[in-house]
Image (tube, rainbow, N blue to C red; front, top):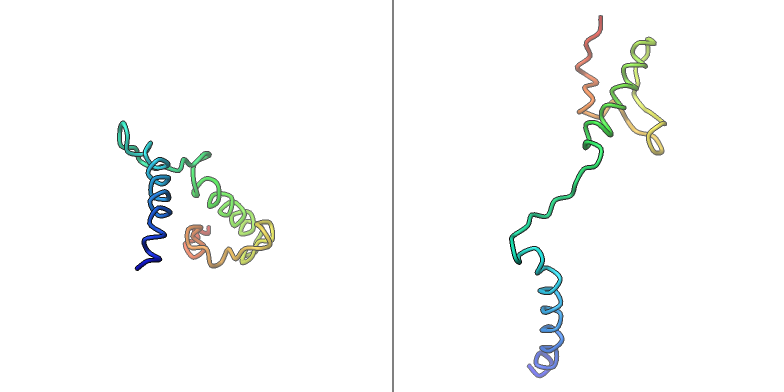
Length: 90
């Protein structure tokens, strides 16, 4: 019990620092925390380029299962947003 009383001023100071830090979110008007997506989000930045790579490979007569042009390599076959299994081949 004595240790808790010794730590009470420390916890009060930490609580006060947190209140001061987060006060602009609630005063004078409530604000939402939003992370802006500069450039359009995942669909434009990530999925369209992968679809383009897949389209180029299919037009050349091959399947693109893996791309070494994305990071250290990326499995295109496992990416569901690209639509690997929904191919509209002529």
